[in-house]
Amino acid sequence: MRLNATLCALTIFLGACGSAPVPEAKKEAAPAPPVVPVTGLHALYQMYTASRAWAPDAQIYQLTSVPVSDVKPQPGKVGAWQAIMVSPSLQQSLTYTFSVADESVSLPKGVDKGKPESWSLHGSTVPFAISEAKADSDQAFEAAAKKATDYIAQHPDMNITYQLEHNPTNGGTAWHILWGESAGSSSFSIIVDANTGAYVETLH
Image (cartoon, rainbow, N blue to C red):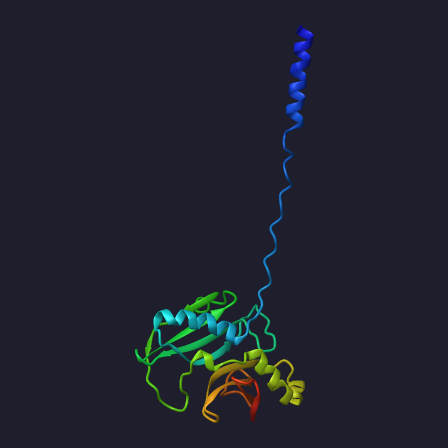
């Protein structure tokens, strides 16, 4: 009887040991996806959506590309964008930024906004509805590049700035593709229709 009891106890013990779960090897954390630049309209939609909470009648005054040090730009795409929104009813403007990475305190990742400032319509640049911009910045660059083949070949590493605003020449919206840091420092730029994506003119 003692032998049988001992064998039974040993069998139960071995069975319990055999059924113990084997600990899984620790899984390595998946690497973070690379940070990639975005087009102007992609960023603009994020900022425009946020601006509607500030003013239901918000319109776009100007959209400008902003370089981000750790995000390599691609044709028509950059790491951050800045949009100036205006509200005719409030007579105010509000500057928004959208960045794919934390560049600085003043340019954090995601959508950020400044403080409202007084605004009134003046000059030839007027605000426009988001529906008036159908061609994106990458499409605009493609159209501009066809007219700037020689200049691009001569200045392959020059920074390119993108601006979306009202175009007084044709009364619609247009992309201004500037080779240089700003409109004031650029000696070569091309205007592309923001509705059709078609080439408009070259400026020197």
